[in-house]
Image (cartoon, rainbow, N blue to C red; front, side, top):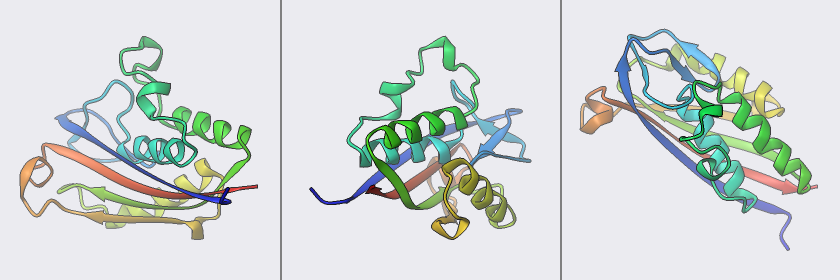
Length: 160
């Protein structure tokens, strides 16, 4: 059995006026936020899917169903903490994470350092092992027309 495993996760949410926008555990000032059962943090949701996928543990919807009232408006950091517990129980640790945020607005360049720092804290890995990139939708489709926000994440885990 190889000591390394790779996981991929993605998430997308509609944007709605007046809701808070959370990305990587950081609240970003914006006129719209993710319309979701939890806080709608697309980065952390994609991260959980990537972690679970790397360890062969299913997906976020199996662990935290969106029709369960226990998760209504919950902070997505709870999902990350549980996914990390499951990895640890199975003898894995996170090596690194690479993230792409897809949003036409707000501009994310000024927020990337804070997102990296918060993800480093939540994932319990050095900030040098956390990468965050931002892309626009080039004014195409729901992301480009500011109707949705999405994230894709790749993680590498290691058997310890």
